[in-house]
Length: 118
Figure 1 (cartoon, rainbow, N blue to C red):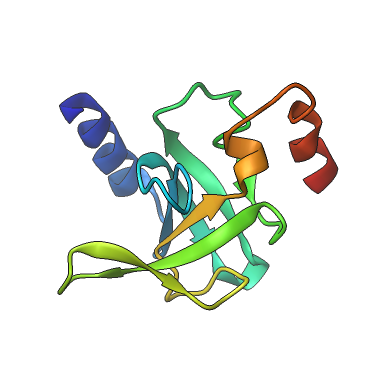
Figure 2: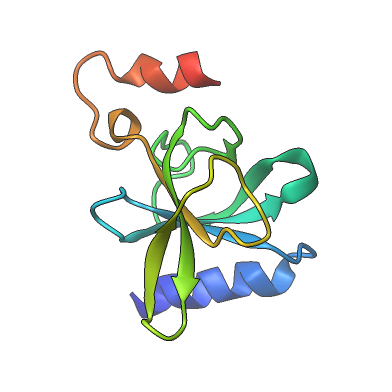
């Protein structure tokens, strides 16, 4: 866990971007999966660190399609937790997101779900 934290912080330090997105496992399981640079002007995010293998569809290289995202979140410093926000796109106020369950909890034919969304 400490190694992952150090590598994620290193990726943040090396980035030139000002906004970042945390990818959470799902809207129900708020576990860290990856870190993305948030390119608000392009309405997309590019992965800079992941705890998953680099070719995993559960942490895609780019997040851009709103069909891929089940929920967006804002971090509440007061409550020390991620809270859902009613948006369908990346903004400077978006701190995290969760992929749709079909991409996270794969079944037999779910591997093509990501290809259809991209």
